[in-house]
Amino acid sequence: MTTEAEILFEERGGLGIITLNRPRALNSLSTGMCVLMDQELVKWATDDAIKAVIIQGAGEKAFCAGGDVKTLAENSPEDHHKATEFFATEYVMNSRIYHFPKPYIALLDGITMGGGVGVSVHGSHRIITEKCLFAMPESAIGLIPDVGGSYFMPRLPGKLGMYLGLTGARLKGADILYTGIGTSYMTSDKIDGFVTALAEADIKSADDVDRVISCFAEDPGEAPLDEFRDLIDAAFGEHCLEDILDHLAAIDHEWAAKTLSKLKKMSPISMKVIIEQILQGGALEFNPAMQMEYRIVSHIVSYQSDFYEGVRAVLIDKDQNPTWNPATVEAVTDAQVMAHFENLGDKELVL
Image (cartoon, rainbow, N blue to C red; front, side):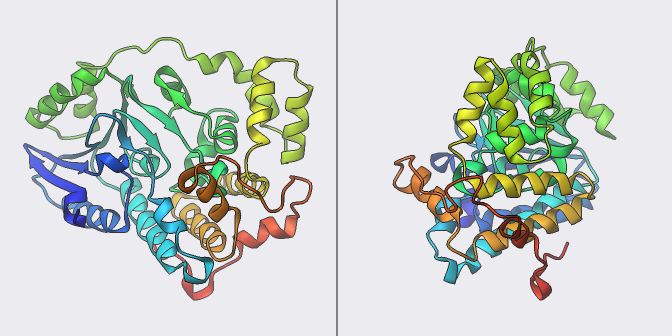
């Protein structure tokens, strides 16, 4: 399949419509897709005929399941330029979305993870359906919740961002709205009618988009996550990973036991880097947060890190049994963590 066919662009009424068109790969992003999308957003930003942008995924299963990390991990640390090129291209495009001057509406009608979060969460509107499954599962493959996770996660209510970043917890429906990741909910069968109505609307501002959405939006009900909110805020409000684990171990509750068990399967060094990432990101503006993330991922792909082992175990061999290095939380040193934040010199990301 050619790169041009992997992502489609259409102008309908006052809308610019982006369709991620790799349904068999769950619409995962390639470098070429990121380049073309960024170019189109640059054009549409100054095109007076385009009043708003919609992004959607092809097929029945996914909006976008992430970046194509399997392909990236197939290159060795000694030949990691394809990985850093992908991340740089993707992050420039993520920044373009964050700064986009017009309404940007993501239709999260299916699996939305990793890179799919990056092409949706920074826009003005995130419409979810009953088919949406949200997660940032990078700690399970030795990576970090990037694509702007450093910026949006610490700005979620309470300690939900730290919880989602470390555990990779999967959210649906009302929980996605509860966190603020989604902005509206409508059933999947209403999406086509909504897009048609928006294309026919006279859009002058985000308020006009809101008015059209209100004609289709529904209440998804109570958020199950709310039941555990106090436990989440207390445990994930601790200042280091060891304290988070100890706090969870001390809670006599099924949720705490399941959460602790999940964390014990994640990459120890990734979890410690993620904590530092989110803590630093809470004090950064968007572009500096993206530049920090680029430093982290550039360092991760430059040595035989847990990223390569995680992708092998989860996506290539699929044995779900990674051998982490260091193997335990206690063995991870502060120096190992902070090495991922070191300046890249003339290879810093330019935004």
